[in-house]
Length: 309
Image (cartoon, rainbow, N blue to C red; front, side, top):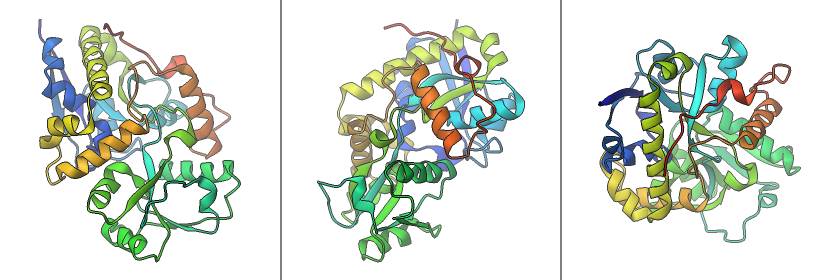
């Protein structure tokens, strides 16, 4: 029996290279091996809020699942109850990086003291998480954090010219400038923030109950894709997914994927660990994204259809 699922990816800005596991599963035949057909759809708007295009598509049953931040499901739980489930891990660490005009092989977060950072992405939870990280290192009042202009090329040029010291963004966005030699990656934020389930596949709880075999098949295919990501170098991965990123050079894909592999951003398994979930909840409460008076229990939002080797 062939199973079918519709995956809404949000708008084109949501198709980032750290979300490549389902593209690999499709390209390498892992979905087909599970007798599963996945229909990829998009929305006119993406975003990491409950108003973002892909989450309403799931809530309204226009799609069976989506990929995004569990932080959205957590906030939805506090506002609407346990209607969503994070069922399959995708990104297990903060995928944001710092880049500078020159390589800084000995960089430490303490080096940010007295410096100017342009928050090129202006993504709410990423910005709040960076501010949290600065507080953890006693740098909250020692770093000038400027909002991005909305023009990435302009912001990168300011850093390259020395008008600002660092650019803060996802490696997906930074990789083209790094591949072109304009900027250099100096630090990932994955290790400093600890293990957090930054992104996961999300579905309605009742839809998962209606299609248990399909979601189990999807999870097994993603498990294979995540293993494949660990076992192959960045060039091999880039060659498989390049067609999914039109306008993105192969060199930039290699830079970005290699950086994410080295930072261990891709989830090592499809099950979201309780400790990682709880750590992320605490971080999100500390930065004001979640209401600390309303606990978000792991069992209410995380499930796992199971996987086989």
